[in-house]
Amino acid sequence: MHIASTAPAEREAQATTTAPGFGATVRSEWTKFSSARSNWVSIAVALVLSAALTALIAWATGFTWDDWNAADQADFDPITFSLSGLLVAGIVFVVLGVNLAASEYSSGMIRRSPCDHAQPRSCAACQMSVIAAVTTVAALVVNAAIVAAGNLVFGLHDMPTASLTDRDTVRAIAGLTLVAFVFPIIGVAMAFIFRSSAAAITAVLALLFLPSIPGGLPPRRWQEDVLAWLPGPLTDSVSIGFLTTDSAMTKGVVVSVIGLIIWLVLFLGAAWVLLNCRDAWTR
Image 1 (cartoon, rainbow, N blue to C red):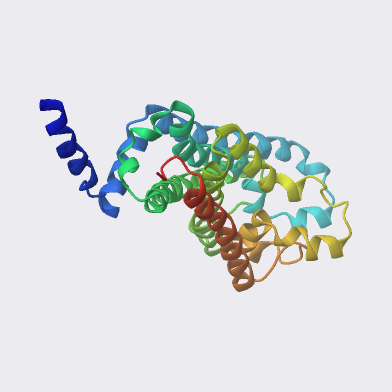
Image 2 (image 1 turned 30 degrees about the vertical axis):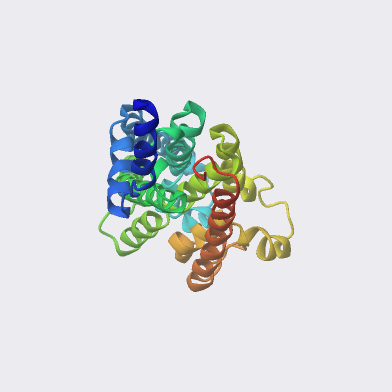
């Protein structure tokens, strides 16, 4: 009799449980992210390896500088040549975004997550907010570090250099920082779509590196009309397009921003549909 009398009360209490607000869910996601030591280790590794890779490539470039012809030396841009280390940071940021969303699926914690009592779309937005904030701040540090490292090495080889206070350098660092969240956010969306870290990371990295695979082999018309509209070239056009105006895959800033918004809407829209249709949070 006691069990029969308490069961309805428990069901009523569960039914009247209110979902946490957006702010509370953001704090929960931030706590989850910040309490994982591996996330901070990954960011530190991204910083160190990005700067080290940039310095290494700059050092190798310096050794061949005297062999360059006059035209190539005149076209040398110390800013763009010092951005090679972004490859490492970009991959790490994508992995952080994917793992933030997909880890609960793989571990089975999704049923016990604080988001279990929240609207799934609201929780997804909170995770995207956290990863966007983290990657933006981390990208600012990484971008400044790699530009400084590259130009330090260029200076040791008596090559042209750019200061961190130069107008173009500041503009490039600011632009790269402002678009740093794009692929991590796509990674979060991919995690909701595939519910698998491996599949999501593979899909995002394929999208990120697809334009660079054929190199300069495709016809210029193909580069302008197809490859240039992929998310990677669009982020480059927004951030450092003013340094590569002669590139076939460089679009105007306004057009590139609109293109990026369309890509984000497509990925987030697909994730939103799947969250409503079959996600584990939906009961």
